[in-house]
Image (cartoon, rainbow, N blue to C red; front, side):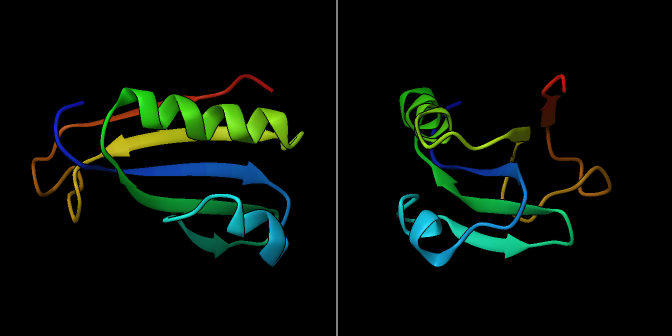
Length: 86
């Protein structure tokens, strides 16, 4: 990862405003059975810090998606997605 990259961290369940606040700089997108935390991440160290926070708060991680802002497969952006085994 070089430069700021948009990351989506999907957490099982709906997060309270207090828990979302623990992920400063990330926006919460609530779904039916999960919450997506979306925001810019400067480097791998910051991403690892966010994932450690998920662990430390006892949240259940569903997936992590790393991609370029505004890009999708149709836009030709490089996108890597790693699903966490349940």
